[in-house]
Structure formats: C-alpha cells, structure tokens
Amino acid sequence: LVKENVPTAFLMPAGNSPSRARMIGKITAKMGVNANFYVHEAVDYSVHQRAATAVFGASVKPFWKLDKAAIILSLDCDFIGTEEDSHRHMRDFARGRKLAKNEGRMSRLYVAEALMSQTGANADHRQRMNASTVTAATGYLADKLGIAVKGNVAAPANKKEKDWLDECLEDLKVHAGKGLVMAGYRQPQPVHELVNLINEKLGNLAHAVEIHVSDTPPVHGNLHDLKDNLGNLERIINLGCNPAYDGGADLDWASNAKGKTKFRLSYFAEDESSDGKGVVVPRAHYLESWGDARTSDGTLVPVQPLIAPLFDGLSELEVL
Image (tube, rainbow, N blue to C red; front, top):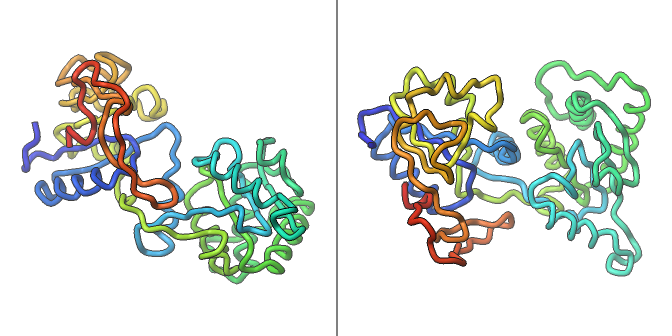
C-alpha cells in the first residue's frame, strides 16, 4: 500500500495528538517528498494557529484568557457561541463580569459583527458591519497603532463605524496590557495575523492572551492544496474524511480524485466519497479507541476507551 518511491497523499481530519505528530514526522523522514499530508475539516479552526505561526515564526497558537481582560474587542468572533472552546470562553467571560470577584470592576465587551450572535447579544458596545468590512476595520486599527499593514489601508467608509473604532481603540490604549483583541474563524488569515500584532503592540501578550507551543505544526496543506497537487500524486490514503460531502462544490472531488484513493478509513462502507475501488477499513469510534491529545491550555492527556470495540475497527493512530 505504501511505497517510499510512490507519491502519496495522506488526508486526515484535524487533530491535536502528539503521537500522531511524531508518527507523521517518522513517515516523512522515511518517504521524504513522496509523503504529502493534508488536513480537512468542514469548519476550519486552524486559522488561529496558522496566523500565530506566521507572525511569531514558530509552531504556536493563541490561548485567550477572557477572565484576565479588562477590555475585550471581538472582530466577528462569536466566542460564546460558535468558536472552538466556547464552553471555556463562556466560563472565563462570566468570571470577568462578576463585580464581587473583581474588586467592583467588570470587563467591557466591544463586538463588531455582521449578524447578531450570542456574543453580540452580551456586548456593552456592538457595531454592526459587513463581514467583509471587518478586514478594513482590523487594518485601520493596526495602522492607527503604527503596525505595518500590507496593501492599502482604507478606513471603513461609514463614519459611524470609524468613530466606533476610534473610541474602542482609545479604550484599549488606556487599558494597555489588560486588553484582548480577538478575530473569528470566519475571517481570513491576514486579519488574524494583524490581531496578533495588535495584541503584541498593546502589551496584551502573557496576560489576557498567551502564546502556546503546538505539537502539530500547521505545515499540512488543505483540501484545495490537495486538489491542485492531484496530478503529481499516485494514491491517496484517506484517514476518515468525506470531502465529496463537506469539501465544497467548487472542488468537484468525486470527479477530480476518481481512482486516486487506494485506502479509506471510514465509518461507512459507502458514502459520497466512495468510488467502489481500493480498500475500505472500518474506522474505530473515539469512544472505543486509545490515544492521546493536548487540551487548549497545553495539558497532555491520555484518551481511554469507554466501551469494548464493536466491529474490530482501526483508529487513525493504528493505521499510521
């Protein structure tokens, strides 16, 4: 199935297993340029890590501590609702809003977003703006702080939006070192990169936002990268993804990758990405699998099965 001299793509769901990262490193060392790794999820939360890695030059990711922030600016970031780790964000945000536990002070929340979210509903100051305008708003804030911004920086066309951003920035400056600026996963990577630079400029690092080293370097390509590289690959080893279903219609995965998949690890014998060829192996459910993971705060934890294996399935770690 796997030969060192055959260009092979490994398509995997996102994961934060240190063991998986080590095995990927060993496979890469053995196969060299013939081993290509791609990660696909229907919702991509890895933009936070990719942006932080690009800014700080190491495999890192931001860790938000909302209970430590006096001023919070959310740029299309629904941290109470749809963001990753929302359960932790809700708890920490609630802690920062309790007067009795904060010497009579309560954190202040600014939210700039297109649609009303759970986070926006809890905002002290909310500014509705187009999702595309968030990019200009972030560049405007960075430019005001003297941060070099690629391309032309145009202030939001709406004067009300501009005034709102000016007041928010002034509040962040007054509380420098005790603020937190966040961007949501729906925003493009350049916005996240600027947010990291803004937090650094305001002295918020190591207080309301920490930079944690990550076991999994964000060097893997995505599904679009895999599509562009299909002509150079002879086989795909799919470890649990269904790209024809949740990969986007513009990829036309069923046609473009036809005949390339030689091995699939799947919960189903047939699904949208099946082409009737290659080997299909039952994928073990996470409740019946061993493994390891790293939590969002950096703690390494073991993953222990809660039930006995049902169908002799294999986990992603076992296949690797």
